[in-house]
Amino acid sequence: MEEKALPQPLTPQEERTWAMLAHLSILLNLVSGFIGVFAPLVIYVLFKERSRYVGFQSLQAFVFQLLAWVGGGAIAVIAWVLTAALSAILVGCLCVPVAVLLSLIPLGALVYGVIGGVQCSQGLDFRYWLIGDWLAKQFFA
Image 1 (cartoon, one colour):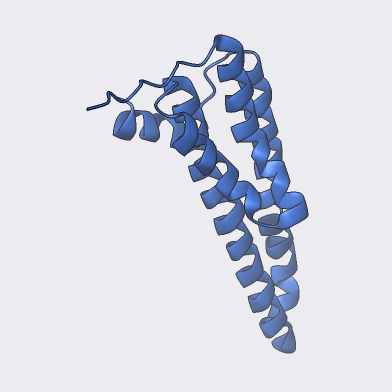
Image 2: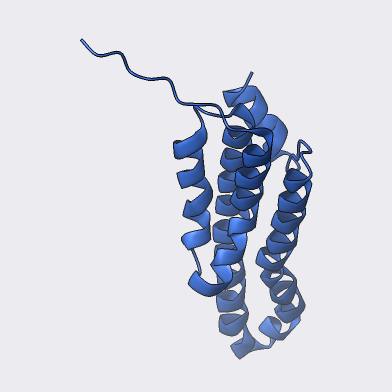
């Protein structure tokens, strides 16, 4: 019976690189719309056994992108549809500023993801607001 070889741990430089790529994968959403959401999930599956740091950072990036990019995008679309529908009775015109602000959620997520990538490239323990602490308690305690 063959023994299963244990995966080799990542070097500190490899950890920083993969964690950074997990966060920066949000930029893929600019060209694909949604593929960036799956990139940190792939990184998580491939490297969770080799690095706790990469596992945490990539899972965090995945959950953040689901909430901010997919959820934020859906909220923005709903806001614009409601604004268009209500424009027939002039109330929708008052909704335009709200719809514009809600449309900025995915853009803010891009900036926040880049900040996470930069901090991980420097070897810092980046945590998204609310998401990071919750994931740490749920999966990495």
